[in-house]
Image 1: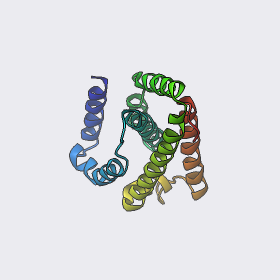
Image 2: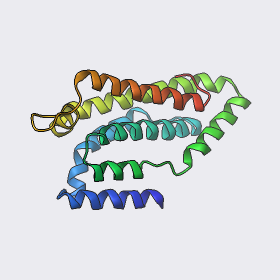
Image 3: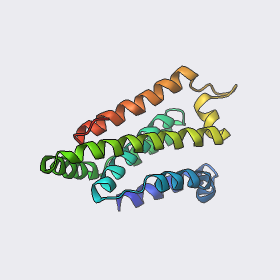
Length: 173
């Protein structure tokens, strides 16, 4: 129910700024679909890791991007990205599975690396394909954004957060 409330808040914000929510999201459907097609889990544990890692990477990326938005939208993004407690469940279940069979850790660590690689690849593709997102990141004459060095630091922060997340799961990044 919390997620639906977040959806409603985001939809309202898009409408407030004059955007059609479906039209605003449509350009990103292909990238999200491609991510899911390339990262279909084969086991329940892979599904849990995908949910935890994928949601974490996406949330980190959205937080980074929100730094370039107006304060009201930034605050909304920060609010809707709050963890509803699901991550603790995944951490506990994966750690218990590794304790029962330590061999699981290697396979899930590889899976986590594949997930982050695919997620970052899709994020870069979306940024490259969408002029509006690219200009949000790098700015324009009217509104400066991040320079190339800052973009590199952003992707470094995303990778570091992924490593910490994997560590919580008992997996090496």
